[in-house]
Length: 259
Ligand code: ADP
Image (cartoon, rainbow, N blue to C red; front, side, top):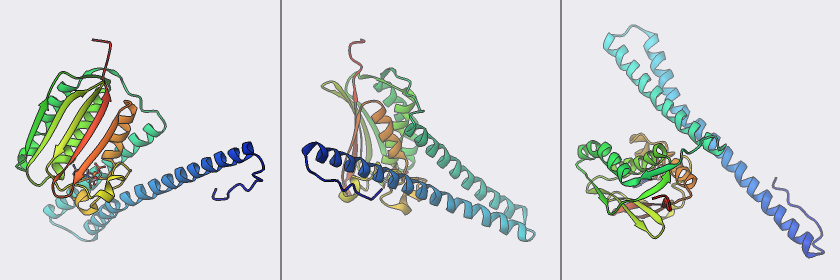
């Protein structure tokens, strides 16, 4: 595909056609490259847990162990299998979204209720880390959306905010701006260096691999958020300052004319 068309550029129309074809070939090239990278990254992610499962099983089979030792090996195997199961679920979701097989169930949705629910769900996790989790629902905001997916979106953002914030607070805020709903998740965490900001919505992209893995992350959460927001004709943005914190902004069209 890297071959370029070498046709006479005698007249404008042919020149234009050649340029268009060139552009299409470039885009195909990039799409194939992304696909190859995705497959390579996914395979790589499976390798570590598989190696752990195999070595635990082999060590257990080699000689007699105490019941406690067998138990420990089985627990490690179970945890790794669970990790792989999570990974498969996320990969399947992304694959189905690529093929447009994953349909959104759109209905009028009160985002305030959604914020209430997610805040309540994460109170415990925030408290465990000594973080304050605050919600600021400024007004009544209704969009047309898929409740399960938008809950998943907000939960992903709040989960990240808590994971990457050693101290301080996480604020979830909701308001209207013109004809858009604006949902923000703001934290006082580690922040994201400028050079990484453009990439964090890519699949398997992690700023700090060791930290993310220790927290149980695959680098797929924000890719899933990006898909959910785009399927709602919305937009997701990020602002961050290293050592000061990060803000994710989600813009969604309001459900107008129906209430
Ligand atoms: P992960 O499962 O690794 O958290 P995500 O796709 O959710 O994957 O996020 C991608 C990367 O973006 C993370 O690995 C992390 O480096 C960075 N990131 C996401 N949210 C935040 C945040 N609130 N503060 C700092 N870094 C973040």
